[in-house]
Image 1 (cartoon, rainbow, N blue to C red):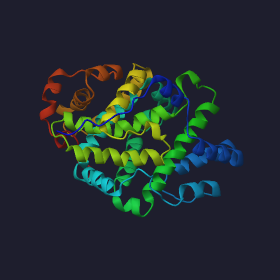
Image 2: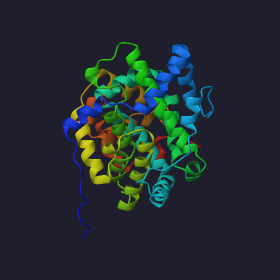
Image 3: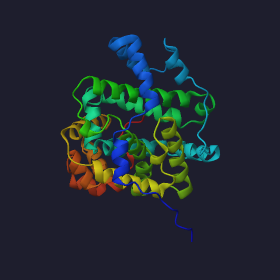
Length: 326
């Protein structure tokens, strides 16, 4: 019998503070870009962040994005390799979990969804956003990209993107501090938890649970990503037990119905439905979301109830629902 792993707890006082906390290092870089190029230059810089280019016209940006890749002290390369191998061996299933579980799970956080909704990028260009998310994940889940530095650069550009979104949100004067700082520490931790722990939970629910060492290794890779992305160490779970505890705290604090969350989920669902080749199966993506999320979260997001399809959901292979990505 394995001993029960100890877990930290995450009191509201701590979470309230972190909800008002951004990323000082990245925020200072964005401020300097704005001071040197003004708003038009900052908008151009934001567009650059969405490319695969690694060189920018400002030294402060280049020095940050192309800094010497160094793993955090807690990182274990062998465990990271195991986590990336697990991803490679389960790409199709994990991709379904990301699209039908992790992303809508993030939208259930009402105040965090406000930032995504205000950008309009997900509602108006959902497929592009999905492609960007997929490109990021497939990049950071390959060993060679950690060895050649590409993974670090990809993560650091996302870190700067978060800081730029914080700046734009506050600068436009429509942001209420009662919602927390835009793209704050709590929301970043919740998003990375959705892409790691919640994916593992979805795999377990879908009927083929990963081995505990594989699940811990996959979480470990995301912990390293979180650290490089600027998430404070206090919000990086040491194990799946802590990830479970942190998820429950964030969900209790942030999950509630919102127009923004419903709009984001509707746009995502319509895009996924467009990949279903058989018109008779068009309602299965909604059923898959409800099955993976559970009825309570699905109701928050306004996901249609499709009772018959939901009963069949555990027995329908994902490859029958979606077109091949090849």
